[in-house]
Amino acid sequence: MNIANIYQGAFLWIAVIIATVLIQWLVASGRKAKQNGAIPGKPPTDLSHHDFVFRAWRTHQNSVENLGTMLGASFLAILVGVDAGWTTLLIAIMALSRIIHMVLYYAIATEQNPSPRSYFFMLGWIANLALLVLSFITLLS
Image (tube, rainbow, N blue to C red):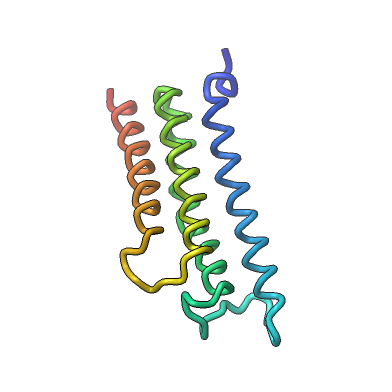
């Protein structure tokens, strides 16, 4: 059996993570481009959480900031042979947490910390950490 078959579920959730970031990119850049005087590549720094353009941009930026560790831990776990069931579950939790984080960030204009989205950020972070710990355990055993 090859790695693609063993980790098919994990690869599916990795694809969901990548698709989520692409959708966020489209939403953020599309909404920003509709603003008067929008300058490509310049972040909406003069806005706050009460503006959807800022929230869409921050949602995308937050996902990009997490993408390296999410994909890194995912592929490390696959390459070192962490149990496929645990790998798939933890990547699914990361993907679903990012989607719920996105929806909450789009829907709730708050500068409160922690906000409802913070809990899903942390859930994804913990799943990412767990996947990395399992990779270390597998490597060291």
